[in-house]
Image (tube, rainbow over all chains, first blue to last red; front, side, top):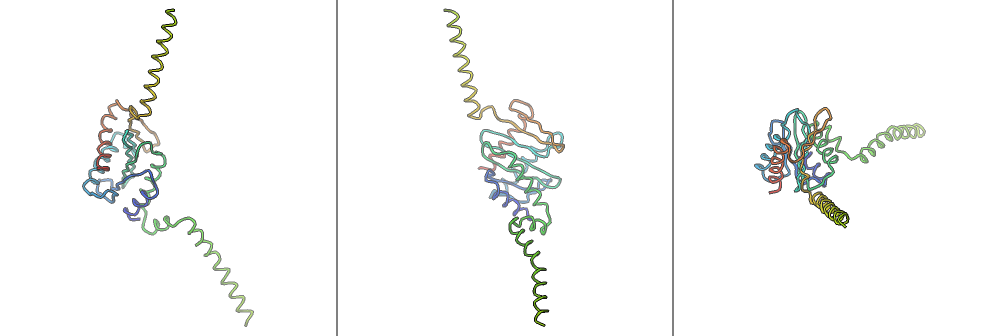
Length: 145
Length: 69
């Protein structure tokens, strides 16, 4: 999935996230919900500092009276998000990890993952019904002949 | 009589400390901290006043400022 799409999905899914920035591990910007590219780069620069401590942290949450900052990273990318006060940390981390996973998936796989479960179920049911319909049509044509 | 006065002062001081603690918690002061998670599943909390928090909290504050300005 395209990084911008993964980030747009993240902000749409999580009402707690005010803004988010996605980047490669080396700090190069992939996508941002911030309008200003320079500020996005500054956010990534600071985020790299947050997860750059001893022991190679994979996730960081900074809790401040004015809001919270979340950083999640994997081997190739990192995502930074800003929330208001008292967010549900577990949910925010889950959404950020999903965003990273989707951003790293091949376009076709991500497209498949993005198909709503209900629609996928309908498609599966239709695929199951197809051979039965073909067989019924065959039997009908045999009966006519 | 002296015992009664002592008890009254003790109750007053205790109430004041309790009220201060509740106010402090509700206003969010003193709750600044950084929680760091590692690949092995472990997590360390650095509360305000620790060296690591002193390093990381200003960084987080700059992220908030950049994201909101």
